[in-house]
Image (cartoon, rainbow over all chains, first blue to last red; front, side, top):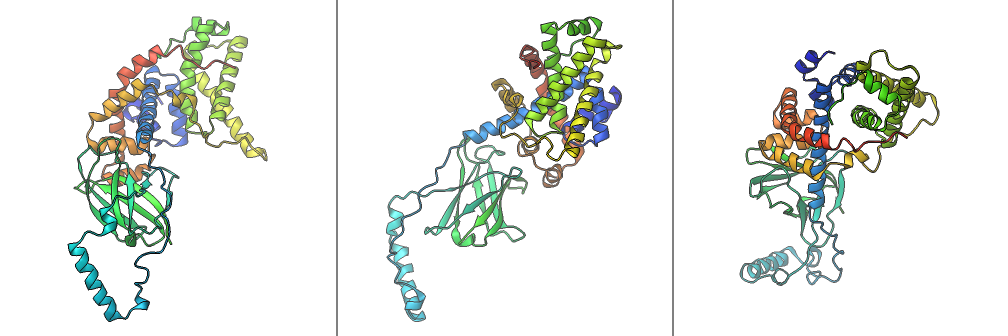
Length: 220
Length: 191
């Protein structure tokens, strides 16, 4: 390979992107070891790639660490007696009417008091790094925490959560958080019932994917 | 660091074990060999072994026989490295327990040396890019996504990736070259 051929075929870019066949790679290496200009192209490209990796690692390291909270303490639920088996359907309907009426007018005590909830931290896709999460618990919802690296703070986003090969189970809109702050998404546990592979995808309002968070769901 | 002129005086100094010339030689070719070998070997130890073996063979040849064409020093280093690499491949296919080529848990020392200036510069370069282009570079080089997936997801073709890399590299290169020149003294000593 000569210098003109290297330039016209964008050899240094294709080399760095891993787009060359093995013989072509050897031929280009033979050239750039001899050609100062092409060697500098390859070195600069390699340095750029390493710097992007370093910045990515730096951003990941700057994320606030969320400690796994201790499991919620077990105990007798105050509504434990309220099982369908214990009540006739008519009684259940009447009771539900009372509960709904109460909720409509009075704040539920457990929501009026402060409580700590441990979010589940989702990582962006990286090769061989699919995480397993467990959403078991007594709270009726799970909080997913994720870093948004490809959107300006305040930018509108859409999120979709779906099982592998399945339809979107959860979707909604959000805005990109400030640098260093995670985006928290509250999801009803009942929406995450199927164990197996799932993906949370972040998109721009136009539908362009900007984040991909695959995970294995271990559930029940 | 800038490429040296490889003339007969340079070769002579190298053959006479001049410390400054040896440092220059190992720094310049050490970087090129690392780039070449990283695409073929995963183990940092193996990459280092092949690099050191290449240097030893090149210097031994220079001291014993010299080279007929000093300007072809780069080509000679590359061909010696190819020989060492092929020997390693043969060894791996022949020996019951070939040298392990597992990726190292720790990054290569060279990879760790990404200065704060370089990180700042790459942030600057990326901040001047459209969001989609920033995303592409991050997906390619940090998240290591497959190029097909990147192209499909963002609706671009392979040529777009090459042009984008070419532009980003162009913006990054000028300042990086200046800094690289000042780091010339930091080199891998020959064992």
